[in-house]
Every structure is written in C-alpha cells, then in structure tokens.
Length: 150
Length: 156
Image (cartoon, rainbow over all chains, first blue to last red; front, side):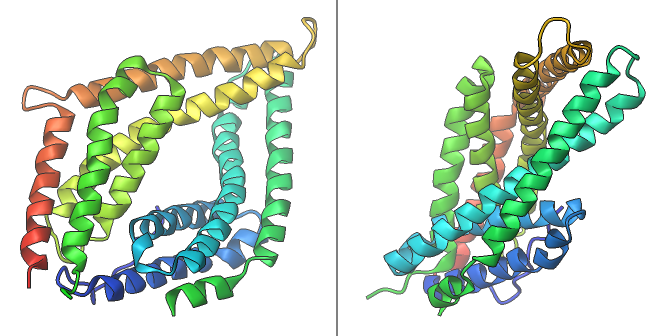
C-alpha cells in the first residue's frame, strides 16, 4: 500500500493556509518519488504507489481549493488529472493481468486460446499505456506545482 | 479577520464527504449497478484520504480509517469484476461463434459473473453489519468521534 506521509508538524490549530501547503507539498513528494521506477516499466508496485499518491494529492487539492489562486490551482489539477488517467490505464492492466495469469494453469485445453488472447490484449494495452504515460511524464510541468505551493 | 484553522476546516470536509458515503451507500448497494457502486467507491476513497490528513492530531481517526479500508476493499473487488467483465465482453464481441478463442472467453465471462455476485454479496453483508450494529451506524459513530476531537483541538 502506498505510504501516507507522516506530517508531525501538522496540528489542528495551525492556520489553514500553512497546513494546506504543508500537506500538498508532502503529498506531491509522494507522487514524484516512484517516477523512475514506474518508467523502468516492470515495477507494478511503484505504479500502484504512484496512482494512489496522485489520488491522495487530487483529493487534498479538491479539499483545499479555496486556499490557492484559482488559475494556478486549475492548471496544476488538470495536469495531475491527465497523469492520473494515464497511470490508471497501466495499473488497471496490471490488476487484470495478475488475476488472469492465475487462471491459465487451471484452464482446460479448450479454454486456453481464449485466455491467452485476453492476456495478450492486456499486455498490449499495458505497453501502449506505459508509452503514453512516459510521454505525459516527459511533458509534465513540475513548475506548475512549485508555483502553486510557493 | 479571524484566522481559519486546519482542524475545523478538515472537520467540515470530512462531514461533507461522509454525508455522501452514508447517503449514497444504501441505494448504490441495494441496486448493485456498477456506475453507482463506482461512484460510492470514489466517495469512500475521498473520505478516507480526508480522514488520513487528521491522523497526526486525531487518534480517533484510526478506527474510521480501519472501517473505510474494509468497505473500500470490498467495493474494489466488485469494481475489478466489472472492469474484467467489460474487457471480456469487448473481446467476445469480436469473435465469430466457431472461433477457437471463444470457449476461453466465455469461461472467463462466466467466472467473472460469479465473482461479481460473491463480491456484491460481501459488500451487502458488510454494510448490513451484525448484532452489534450496522456498518453505517459504526462508521457514523467513529466519524463523529473524530470530528469532535478535531473541533476541540482546532479551537484557539
């Protein structure tokens, strides 16, 4: 399971704006940490971690929307949503492949060609999605987040 | 101008997100349609992520997180089955009746249908709870404890 950042500095009584920035900075760090492993291509755990980290960040961004300048917030949110969508396609293929591999061993001879076809389709989906994710990451504008959290 | 504090702000976010889960849960689980259950799963995740942010200063949040993780996991199995079913349906639609791949795809569709049935039954059983109380009652009580703690600690 993806790590929830530990934020010892947080307190219920701290000013909202300072708390929101602290939280978003920590969650953003969790998003970028697995990027090298994700781009290596075969690290399914890192794909999962990054996907969950993006969801956490997007959820927090939505909660703290009013603490940030509207345009910067919208730009950062849109970039993160695109990244999350691409990553989701890779992760969905991983989950499905994991479930399907277990079925092949117990399948009858009649059933094997169909299961093999499903496996091939999912491998192809994953390859394509990972390629698109790499493009998305290469275009990902980290400055948008630096500006948002400044 | 009065400075706004993190605790009460998060309490409001949690209250709003929990209302969504508690109100949307019964019709979604009762009907069992994938779109409603998907929306409920997203609502559960959003609530969970908001509660996670309070862990540092609200120890009561741990119980809420435990309960939300159980529901999220149960709904996740259901969502997986729905996603698998869509893939098999698309694959099956491309095959002619005599295609050698058809028996395997049909077997996968059948197995996935059965798994979805089990997953939905598990979600319904979790939601119904046991003799000590229903899931939404327990969730509401633990959220209430977390909210109380946040409001007290955020006052200054």
